[in-house]
Length: 478
Image (cartoon, rainbow, N blue to C red; front, side):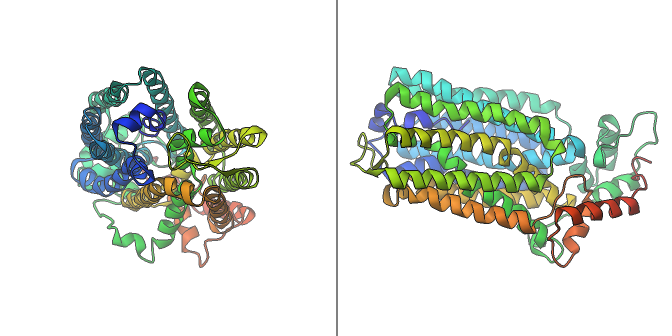
């Protein structure tokens, strides 16, 4: 919800007047406060969930979000605005770790792509709804416009708090805390076992030995273990994929789409109407991974998405640089000092729409799923916390510096993002392993090889050989 809660207001005159026309640095702080909070939330996630469990963590984070919404709705100055977004960011950052971890622990392997896509659809729908709430309230051109919008964000948090009491606790968390009876009950009730095998009430009951085989007992992985010889390749691959998501520039485009609209000469209602299109596209194209992700190879989707997005972002910058020119700050906004109008401006807007469509179809869901699958089960919680911390750190840096970059180097900003994205995507395509259809043991064996580079044919042969060796049914299924 925070992605679009500032988009409409950020370029509105009454909003800037109320906060004394913040310059590029303060604009970066306002927008970047949320990802900075996200970074803190990733760190706090491990503390909260280790002590309370996965389901109670949902309730705690819902309350944190409500607190941030109260601060934002009662905002008096720019620093209070930054504080409210920072507190909400803490909740968002923790959720960004909790959701993939929870899905990985309670959803069968062959359904995780769908589950991840459903979550992403919820995210994109919330972004769209909040944008139009802000769009409508913006017509009042009063401070109550943004106060009401930010206050309404408490409603889904209250619903989440109440409904979270119906969530199952993670069997993995229960096993890691020695609560084997509860873990056994949840496994038998829900049929959650590795690779989607299920145990019905009329089949052999799950035993403590089965749980130990499945989850490894009460041993815990520390953050230091993530950089050990055993896990460092897993960690590097997972973190790199999350870095790719950030450097592709999706958050800069979504946060500052109104600035791009002003650069190409759109004003007033036309500007806000054009700025709303990416949010529609985001929702529509998220349906593609919902239908296909469970059947597609993860690395191929990530690499294709990254290469395509990098090319488009670089092309946006090149067109801006070739056909644009410097101008005085537009509407007093010191960030917008470049203009490109006419057909080239329209082409840039269309490329922005295409960029969002490709991101929603590829990296939005698959990068999340790929990072989670690469990490072993006993390292998933700490590993995802580290991955998302790196993601939020880079997100905060880019979001904070974007106004300064747009003012100082202008169109070169997009070229830098595009070229970096292409380079990282090539690394993924050449050296990173495929995970689709592989068990955790098979993925571990890939990383134990001297070089984790495996081409598609070798991966298929390797998978077939490993499946032959491990064709015996799992302990729980038997």
